[in-house]
Image (cartoon, rainbow, N blue to C red):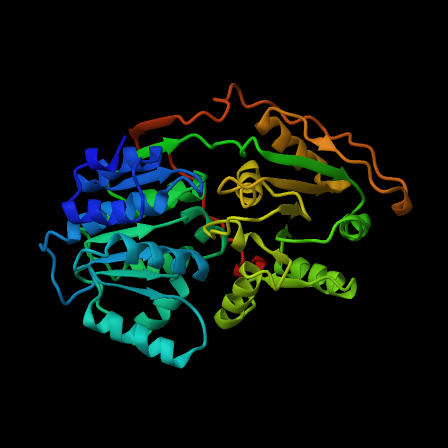
Length: 421
């Protein structure tokens, strides 16, 4: 479907044309009409499917009609990380280029000047506020933010926000919102904690589910079955053979990121690290250095796996096996973008074999196992216990399902600590 077939204002279509956006992705095709109709929505779709445009376009379209107060905050978009908030803000600028719709991005950092700029945008009443939960709470506590006229409340990557421990922050923000708002939630997965949140803050929502797509066929996927202590040696062996260039190494925690970065620095490799302990200015600088090729290897937590556009990554290394198949798809999807080729390598320790086998089952393929270099010693055999099949899958084809929301009583929400990323 073309954007011109949707019920969008002419100036929205002009902006899309200027940005060379022609065809809708499935998530845009199915959710934009629901949002334009005024219904609450929960959309289950992975990163990279065009979710940001799917909610920004109808919201901008509605705000442009002028039926909302000009001196109030009309829309709140919540994002789990500063990087995603920045990216949403950039897309907002493009989509609203020909329209009188204002926005301000609110995210963490210790820059006092930036905090004052955020305060000004909040008090004057930007149409759209794009915020991380903690930063918006900081402004709310100072007493000058009025959310009583908010018409649209959007949660992007809701599952990631709950994984990072933001449930209480979100509920605190919700207390400041009016009851008669439209609430829109996007999530890559639909566990019990997301169902609980949806039942709490959404009113009779429509649910749109899109199938989780498989990795691009042009990504060469391989793995090393190894002991944990052999992982650094494998990296050293890889980069002895070929100079690293445009490489992301994903690790499971910020502590692991720091340890791996130090080890690679001792190998005289040009490496940077990305995790939540860094100040915003540091993170911006590292991303700039990486994009410009002055850093060859970026070691990162999953904070980089979602919502960051870097088109020419040559190699992705999973230093740890991701906890689920969708995270694996998000991670390796950083490579082989924009018509580039790419490779993905996963290090699989003995304790991680079961998780890796589940990923292979999801992909319906056995990933090629590269022998561990002989100088690193004997490696373990690959003998994972077989995961139970969950039934027939759709083989990654772009499917969707619309249904009324399931009101089964969810399990009690269990927050994960913020310090894991």
